[in-house]
Amino acid sequence: NLAMVFMDLDRAPEAVARLEVAAAEFAAVGHRHGEALALAWLAAAMTHAGTTAQVGELLDDAAAIARSLKQPSVTVGVLDAVAEACGAAGLTAEATRCAARVIAHPATDEFVRARLRRRSELWQAHESNAATVALNEPDRVGLARLLDELLATIE
Image 1: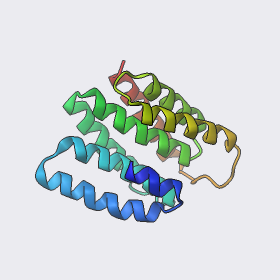
Image 2: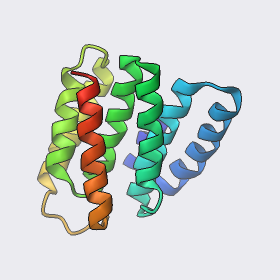
Image 3: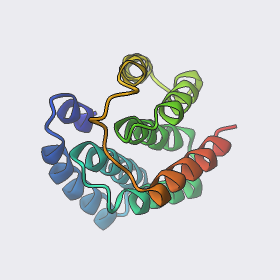
């Protein structure tokens, strides 16, 4: 949630810095749940900041942890961040599809549902906005592939 506060305030670089530290600290103490969420939100924050070089790798790592833990709350948290990354990258259809699944999942709390409803409306309203982050085609394809794989894990 800290990452969303910074991204909503257009302070994504600050969110990136804090999430890099959080991911490293969670990894150092073996807290896999926290590490997965920190990595996923780090990727989303980096997308908002326009730094997309590591986004695919970070999301792959977060997804691998989520799959290994087999805890719906972790998968839903990672999907929440994937939706945000997709929205920031201008992948509106993917972002709204992912958000809809997270909203519908029983492991999702009401705060996240409400935020994702607002974000979905925003993504759709700005669908043609050229201000979204430009992802290269392999990154776009990779993000869509990862989304499909993660959505399959919460079926």
